[in-house]
Length: 264
Image 1 (cartoon, rainbow, N blue to C red):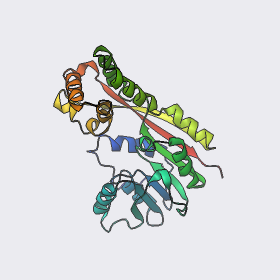
Image 2 (spheres, rainbow, N blue to C red):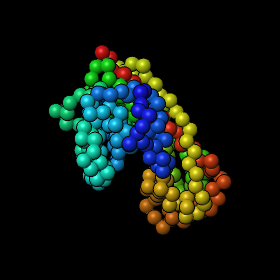
Image 3 (tube, helix red, strand yellow):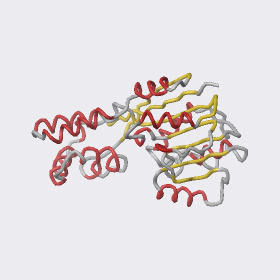
Image 4 (cartoon, helix red, strand yellow):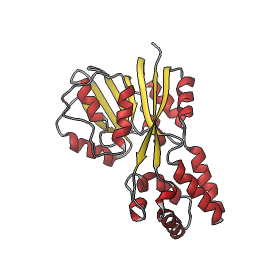
């Protein structure tokens, strides 16, 4: 990956979740000027702005997200800069047939949004690759926050929360692994396939700091709450979990990078 030493659009240092995953993506992405790139699940632009700066005005980046709010936020950040970068509201699970093909397809923190049929979504992304093009995706893979999930499972057993535990187990089984990603890429005929995991520690305090942690309450902890029909019971259950974080810290995420190349 060739990168400019002077960046106007670096990855933001204050983002302790998206940026580490994006850094892992960039480690495995063959990036150079003049490339055309489709960036899926682009959010508010990590790493779309960085990618656009690297390909330069001779290249093109189309960044798509299903959330109109995220697209509007990214456009507001962009203003009139980097005109070869476009943010569009689009569902990566059902890409329009007239969408062009690209030299690279990237998706930072993307795979968990490919539900319900992840394999078919990946197939659609491969179809958008030019021959010889590269697909690179990152996601928190199976094993992420296992210390916490083991504690949640034990607490559900102790409290005889049978229905809640059944739903929780279904959630755990649904999480994709690095091996799942490798299998998808290989079954779709990609070459030079890599599925590499990097550990990422997430720090948190106890009590409200844990329960309202921006990286947890907006996603992973929500999956636990959704296992409960009675949300007041869910609140009592999770509050008790939060009172002794030494039971599950350090809290480790598995940052998985999937990379593969389309045959020429």
